[in-house]
Image (cartoon, rainbow, N blue to C red; front, side, top):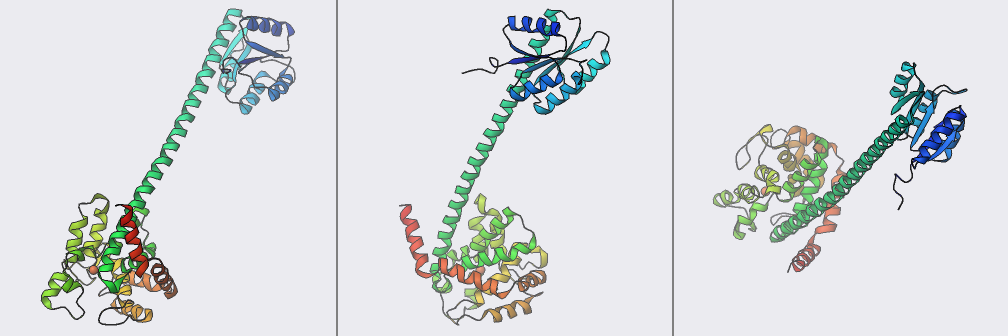
Length: 372
Ligand SMILES: [Fe+2]
């Protein structure tokens, strides 16, 4: 394999043939491949067809100066090293050439040893700059690859969380036979309504989990109460009202679910303070829980219950309108009512198609088989 050093080539530009010949012979004797050009135009023609590691150019040349040539060379390939040959007393030009990007300058008449030293230093500096750039590019590529891998891994973890949580709530929903897919629907309703409140991606993920798991605490409520077809007694209500606290306690110590646990704890609170378990009111109730409260009512009213058939969406919208400012945060209720009814109906139909009834049970069975 040819190394960068093996490919190094120098272009010598000077209108004096004698200077070109001396430099060519000296540098080629030192083992470097060289090409000469008799002026800046000749140099540009040669640069067009081949890449040079270094250009050594006289300043004063007919037609175009060495400084102008330097500008054009740098524009075409900023990594080309450039050494300017200046007159002994022309210090200003030397400074100008350094400002324009030359690595060094040598003064006429020059000593060949000084030329060799300047050439070696310029080539070495260029090699280091190229090495540095390659290293930087390599580093950036590795960072990008690792970022992709990490994102893939995070996506897999997120998916595993999602599937596990969905299996859990399907089992919970299946326990309350009449409310199949309730948790999935309220999650979708919640996320749709939440789009009006400027939440970021993480907040939406947590809110979605809170909505999905809102009734996880019902796992601690006896079947005789949870599945009772008639009205609950006062004592039974006391037990039923413990479910937000039970849910909170289940989730709060699971790191990835602890933000969602607060939604679970507050999902039965009311704007006017008459909710449970803590009687919170107004904006003391987390926004996510206030959003959830509205869509939970929508879903509860539009689902069959042991003691009544599902009510119409219009009836549910009316209930939410009349509960604004008492049961519900008025701003959340207003945002909810501004969304067309058809949007809610579409979510209702799509979630039911995906999750309801036998499909749910099939899903839970297949999921549990996978892990046997
Ligand atoms: Fe609940």
